[in-house]
Image (tube, rainbow, N blue to C red; front, side, top):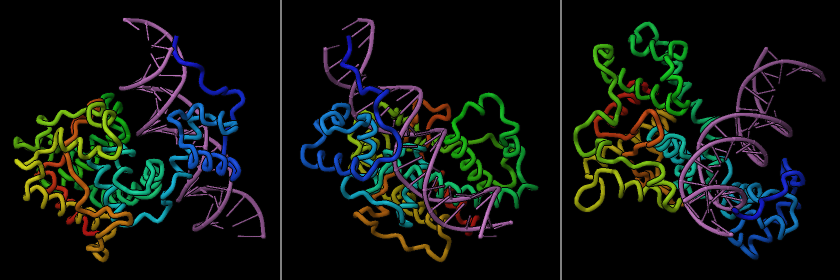
Length: 302
DNA sequence: AAGATATGCAACCGCCGTAAT
DNA sequence: TATTACGGCGGTTGCATATCT
C-alpha cells in the first residue's frame, strides 16, 4: 500500500485566511520550519486547513521578503521576455524576480502585461487588417483547423506574436514564404535541434533557483568559455531594450537598470528551449529572430 | 446616487512527476 | 513492482474593489 491518507477534506476549512490563521502558520514555520511535510503541518499547528493550502499561503503571502504590487519596468521587461521565450513557466520566471511569487507574476501577466502587449498589437491589427496576408487571415480563431485548436492559448499567443514578427520582417511577401518559426530559422548553433531540453529534464530536476543555469548548460549555444558569444549577447541586450520600448514607449526607454533585489537587465539569460510536450515545439531566439523582434518593436514605434 | 461593468488578486482545482510504502 | 500520497505547477474561479455609465 501507499502512504497514509492526506487531510480530511470533509473537515478542512476553505476560503480566505484569517489574520489568526496567518499568525499561527507564520509563527510555527518561523520557529520550527516546515519539517519537510506540508500535509502534517496543519495538524501540528491545530489549523483546520489542507497542507496544500498552508503551503500556498506561506509561499505566496506569509514568506519573508515577499513583494506585492508595483512591478518595475525592468520586471515587466523580464516577464515579457521570458514569457515570449518559454511561455507560461511562471515558477521559472518568478525565480528571476526576487521577492515575486509565481502566482503574483501569473496574475500580473494575465491582468496587465498581456493586455498591454496584445492590446497594442490588436490595435495595430485593426489598423492594418486591409493589408493582412492570407497566412495571417487563416490563423484567425474562426478559421482554425483542429490541429490549431489543439494548441494552448499560451502557444497561440506566441504563435500570433511570431507571425507578427514575420509579417513585419517581410511585409510584402509573407504569403509567398512558408511560415518560419524562430527555432527553424537558423542552421547555426542556436538551432533548437542542438537543444532538445524537455521540461522534465531541465525544470523538474533542478533547483528553482537555477533553472536558467541548467537550461544554459543543456541547450544555449555557448562559446568555448560557457557563455553566449559577444555578438549573441549584444542581440539579447538589444532585444531587451526593444522590449522595454514596446512596453513603455520611447519616453521611458533607457530607464532599465537595477531591479529591486539586485536583478539587472543583463541578468536575464536567453536560452534555446524545447518545450517537449508542446505541439508547437521549440521556442528559442536565434540571432535572426532577435533581429526580427527588433524590427517588430521599431515598426510599432509605441 | 445607483446599477453595471471591469479589474485585481487570493485561493482552489486538477494534473503530473517523484517518492514512499 | 505496483500502488498511492506528496509536492509543485499552471489554469481557473470567485470575491472585493474600482471605474464607468
